[in-house]
Image (cartoon, rainbow, N blue to C red; front, side):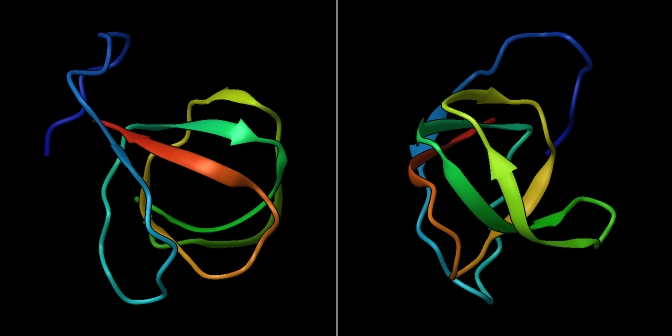
Length: 76
């Protein structure tokens, strides 16, 4: 998947929290604020990462189990 700076997302799919499945996204849309457990495109694991409702411009490869945020969408 190529990431092109400030261009808008071309698609969206609802995230499934899972520790091993790769779910690449150029950004996340958070429906219910809370915390996230994600792996970034650089391989960094973020735990209890605070996420407000709305757009989170963070390139991720996994949305992992844990955290309290819900209704999370992967934007590609």
